[in-house]
Image (cartoon, rainbow, N blue to C red; front, side):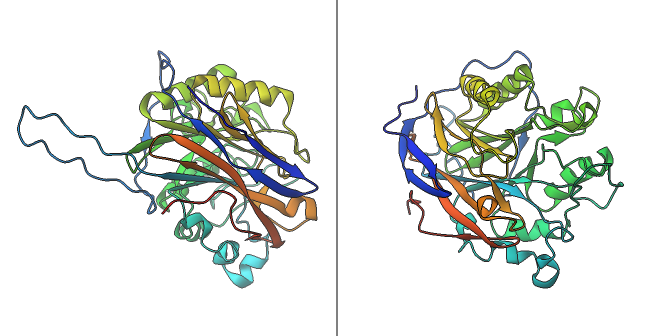
Amino acid sequence: MRRVIQPLVVVIGGSVAGVAAFLVVGPGIEPAASSPPVTVATTSTTMVSQPTPAPTSTSAVATVDPRGWLTIQGAGDTNFDPSYIPEFVANGYGYAFGGLGGLLLQDDLTVVNLECATSELGTPLDKEFTFRCDPAALPVARRFGVDVANLANNHVGDFGMEAMIDSRARVEAAGVAAVGVGSDLAEATSPAVFDIGGWKVAVVGMGGIVPAQGWLAGPSRPGMASGDDIDQMIASVRAAAEVADLVVVTIHWGTEGRSEPDPDDRRRAEALVAAGADVIFGHHPHRLGALEYVDGAPVFWTLGNFVWPRLSDASATTAVARVVVSPEGDVSACLIPVFIETSGRPVVQEPPPCSVPR
C-alpha cells in the first residue's frame, strides 16, 4: 500500500514551488495473462549493482542484495535538430547540458522524451514541423547522464517508419535505453529494466499524441506504443510490475499550451497507477505543469520543454522531476526549477528542493 504525507507541488505564475511528499511503495498487482518481452538495460554508468555473494554450501540460503537509496529524474521534450536549434552548430551538443551543473549525473536513472527522428533515413512527411535530430548528439547526451529516451511521441515518425525504427537502434547504440517504439507491438511496449542498488526499475514508454493510426505498432507492424489504448497501457504496466520493484511510465499526452491535465489523461493515470505504475513522467504540452498524486503515486503531468528553443518565457519555464526512494521504500518527489536561458540550453535556477542522499 502507498502512504502519502502532505503532497504539494504547484506552479504559480510561471515559477515552481515544491514541498516534498512521502509514500510507501507496495507490491505490484497480479500480472496480465499475456506479457510483452522485457528489455534488460545495462548501459547506465550511474546505476549501482552489487553482486550476490555465493552460498557457502549447497544447503545455504542465497543472499539478496540490500536495497540502497535510489534517485530517478525525468525531463521533458528534448530536441537535437541543428536546423531547429542552430546554437548547436556553433557550440556543439554539450552546450545543451552546460547549464545543469551535472544535475543528470547526480542520480541513478534519467529519463527524457526525445522529440524527433534520430536517423539519416527517410524523407519528411507533410507536417507543419518535422524534426531530424543528429545521431552525433546521442553519445553526448549519454555522457551527461541521459539513460532512457522515450520515443513514443508525435515526431519520432516524421521521416517514416524506417527512420523511426532506425532511431531506436541509434539510441541504443549510443548506450541509452529506448522505449515506446519497436519493430512490432511486443518490442514497442517492452520495458527497459535496470538493476540499481538492490532495486529493479522498469521504464515503460507510450504516446497518446498520434498524427496517424499508421504510426501505431501492431502484432506484426512497426510503430509506437499507444498512450490512448487503456487495455494496452494496462497490460504494459502489469508486465513491467511483474519483473520490477518500481515501474516508471513516460508518456506523451495532454494539450499543447496547457499546463493542466486533460480529464481523459486523469483517467488514464488512475488506470496506470492501479495497474502498478509508481511514477508517471508526462510531456507534450510545451508547458510546465504541477506534480500531483494519484492514489499515492507521484504524477508529473507535463514536464514542459527541456532541450528546446527559447520561444517565450512561458515555454522556457520548466523543471526536472526528481524522485528519491529510501532503502525502506519511502519516496520523496519534487520539481527542480529550470529555465531555458538561450535556445537549447536549460539552466538550473536554484538548489533542488529534495536532495540526493550521499
